[in-house]
Length: 110
Image (spheres, helix red, strand yellow):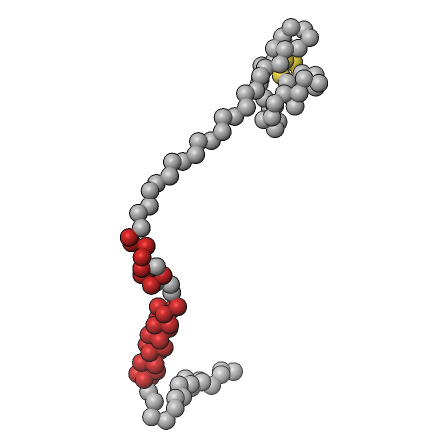
């Protein structure tokens, strides 16, 4: 069975209105939206008109503090550690933790 052909629905508008007036209405709505956004946006000139007379002098950038020095540990077997900071957390080495020997050289941990 075949279906009967359906009619294309017509756009129903108000009496006397046409598609051309709808596009004009959309353009008017967009224009109103643009004006509303322009009125709500803060203006640089309206915020502080006296700012242009103010002179701003650049401030020097503060230098980062010097990091604390880390030291190699010297163990009871008179060998010093290969590293100066912890391999895991990059903090200073803890002398209470025994080193791990890699190729006969001590590696300290925190």
